[in-house]
Length: 111
Image (cartoon, rainbow, N blue to C red; front, side, top):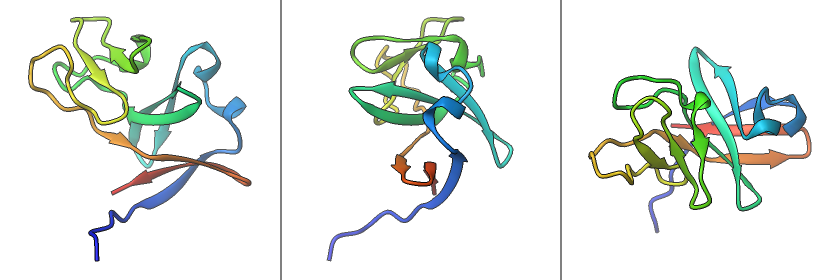
């Protein structure tokens, strides 16, 4: 039997339209005291921490490139929003979580 990750799924919005900022590129939400971003990439939603692991700058103020990388506007660090890997080479890791669009809303899976 393969190891399966188990998540606690939290409903974060009724619909995509209810995620503040998502229409402009990167949405930002507070979930159980956690600040998270939600972004669309390749027709899927992705959730990741709002704070850059380098210096804590808000990633909701950054930009998403065509490769699915979030760029921190303050120091230029960039991270893959699918797996959290630091693609600019500094060795940091961005927490990322799965997102499911269900009939009754948008859910993010936290460990």
